[in-house]
Length: 215
Image 1 (cartoon, rainbow, N blue to C red):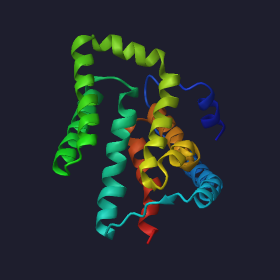
Image 2: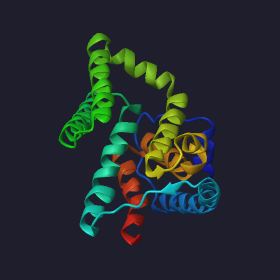
Image 3: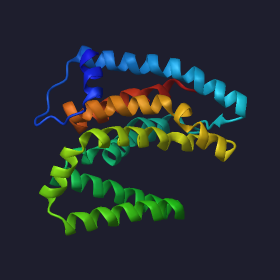
């Protein structure tokens, strides 16, 4: 646990990834559960006071497994954290991931999502074509600390879509409502930078496993 807290003070990207210790990951999971319980109380109070409701996942058990347990961790980790270590493999994963979002937005007829994902995809392609990848990689490495915190925050706030009610109140209290996901983002970011993207995906799946016991 001390290792994780020290990392938060000065996030760095390992030159090589390490194999995580089972008990270390278990401690991180316990920390996440404890944080969810503590922060969830404040989020619940805000929701009750201001009439904000948490949208229930109305899916069959099989779809919960497919979407919540398998697809969501893969897509979210690639989208939010794959490029924290910039190389050809991660660029390809990121673009393929975004292409999937674009296709899904077209199929589901979601113009707002289509515009956003297409813009990000085209911007990424333009940057990769315009700049040498070594330049981008060095810039990311030099700014890994703010990028680590930014991706963790954006990952958490992304889950604001799970709430319904007054838009401005949700926006005002978004950091509290999404605080469990922000904590998860910090833990997942740490695992991604220290142990690699695969372990971040697996830990994300472990976190999302709670959906299997939610009615």
